[in-house]
Length: 319
Image 1 (spheres, one colour):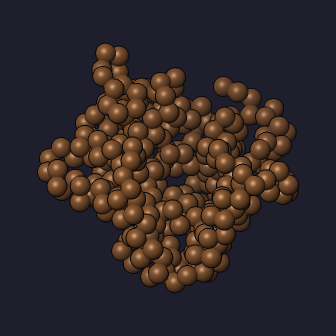
Image 2 (tube, rainbow, N blue to C red):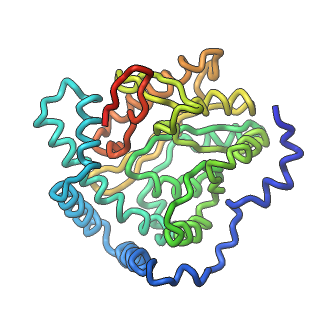
């Protein structure tokens, strides 16, 4: 295992402690479109929640009419994961999903520019006290979440309860990365780029809270195939690996958004007997827990992602 004490000095100089000083290169005309979008998000953040709910639904219906490759990916995912539903039922679920996606498109502005009081009014968080008790004892905790449509608001709300370290993908658009990074400085969280995974391990070893979303197909290099809704899915073994390397307890974090636009976030108790000596069994267990929650709010899971992109040897491509 790495000597985490030797990492301390370099860890504190890494990119999640960025200096978000404005770079005039971001004012280039090629970025004017994204700046306009950021301005629209800022304005929408001031709107009443009922208006935002309606705007999100309208955006979702527009996405459905536009169609495209992502909708076909979502249709295939729903077909694989809900084979017992009729085609008409799955299409209805897809429409509801796109309405949730429509709201997710404007949700970042709400998370970035709302006051703490508004966030606390919109979000309820359960289980954070139990997590804090473990952290107070010097016990690191790794929360495993999933790609629901409400992740940005959850990231803001969780930090109001307990500081954490989140492993995330740096956005391809530098303006989006700049604006989101500036706004996320109020989250009471370190956003650690995926390539700096050793830094997350350091903080877990130190007794802090880490958050990862292990439900994406991240390629075959560090993945194994385990069932996801009964379909073999390339699944990263990070929960098992991180727990073994750092001694962190592993728990789940689930979240959803109700019809009134309020968020419900729940941190579970640490999983018993995790990790085991069987990574396949561990990740099948994680996937099963994720499945169970998705079934409660199927329209809010991000079906637009290619969850089954990579296939076991000899299997035909799905998408």
